[in-house]
Structures are given as structure tokens and as C-alpha cells.
Length: 329
Image (cartoon, rainbow, N blue to C red; front, side):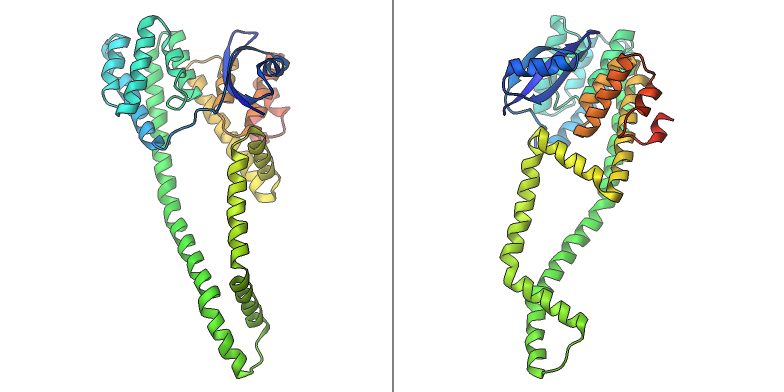
């Protein structure tokens, strides 16, 4: 079943972008109408994903945002500020930002121009800029975004530093255990067998594991590679990502932690948009597009639908089953 990138609008006029699998564009339109959305445009094909230079792009976006937060309060016109901030980025990003500047000069809003490049600017980023344009405080919006992006980079750096050493230890330990099981232990097994000595149960178990690793290593390697390929294949489809996400939530300890992580991510995204001045209903639409977990997206869409029906945010969160009760409280 092909995958479509689409743009739709709801009854309030808020635009939504996303991806959906459907037989054809007409089937996609009917599916979206069932959710209260009306299809504006649909493009069949692979969804644009971040390139291998995602780290470089993140830094470019951060430098661009910092520059805009500094230039706009100084009184520079928007087009000139965009031109100056674009010069701080790399060649690939500079071309995209030049197209954004040209779109603004043609009369498009800055948020619409930025939304045309989803690999650079997330729905959260675009939503904060859109809210700033509505209030006439674009400089404030860029200042908030710069602070948020800096916090994200600091957190990402701490996580990488904290996980790098354990990852190296795990790889080295797995290699050492493999060498012991496949190379070293078989030699000792021959010596012990020649001696005719009775082996303890723990030693017999270790010898049996070593023999299994020596005889069955092709099968073990094939299973490992097959597992990795299966996971990658599931990640390429919306249904596969949903299956993996729901499987994680069913695990005893991992599921609880996963719910807390998703709730924190939902709250952080919504807080950033509301802090930028976005209305609650429109902010939830941007949050749905910003969440990468399919189950969390479905829950956020359900919360948005309940709010459209007249419930408060607290009641809409309480009616769901994914996020922990502390979020609604």
C-alpha cells in the first residue's frame, strides 16, 4: 500500500501535515474526513527524512535561530534579517533558507515558508513562529526557540557522554565473551575430557554453551542479522512502527517508563507552543505532527478531538489511557 504525504485542514481552518498509507488519494481523503479533516494536497512517494548530515543541520538551525533572535530586536526588516542569518549556515542549509527568504518576499508568511522544509524545521518550530506572527512578536518567538534548541543540544550532549562509555564496555564485553566461548573454552574442554575428571554442574553448563556457540554460530549470527533487518523493515511502515510502539508499552517495566517518557515529551512540546502564544487547539495539532511515536500521536489526536467537543484539557487527558494520571493532575 503506497504512502502519501498530505496537507489537510480541519473545521476551524487549522492546517495539518502528515503521512498516511492508503490505496489511493480518494481513499486517503475518505479516511481523513472520518477524522474531521479535509484533504488539500496529497503526494505519493517516500517521506522526506533527515539526511546523514542531521547533526550539521541541527547546528545550522540553532545558529540561524540565534541570529534571528538577535537581529529582529535590533530593528532589521524580516527579509534582511533572514539574509544575514542565512550566511551563518552551511551550503545545503543556506540554499533552503534562501528559498524561505524568497517565499517571504513573495508574500508568504514566515511560518509557511519554514514549513516547506520539514527536515530542517519541525512542526513545533513552525508552530511557535506562526504564533509569534499572529501576535506580532516574531522576535520573541525566535528567542524562545533559541533557548529551547540550546537546552535540547545540551541534553543531547549529556546523554551521548553518559551512554558512550557503557556502550563501549558492552561491545568490548560481548567480543571478549564470544572469544572465550568459541576459542578458549573448547581447548580447555579437550584437556578436561582427556583427564577424565568429573565436572561440576556449572562447568558442564558452560562447556555445553561453548559447544553450542562453536557448532551453531552461523545460526546465531543469522538470527541476529534477521532480527535487525526485521526491526528496520518494521520501522519503514506506519503499521510496523505502531506494532513496535504497542509492544514496548506491554512490557512490564519498560511500558511504565515508556508512558512517562511519552507524557514528558507531549507536555514539553505543548508547553513550548503555548508559551509561544499558540491557541490550545492549534498547538495540539502541531504537537501531533511533532510526536514520532504512533501511539502517542493517536492519543494526542484523541485529546484534541475531545477538546473540540468541549472538554477541558484536564478532562481530555483523564479520558485517555496512555499518559500517566500525574499529567492530567
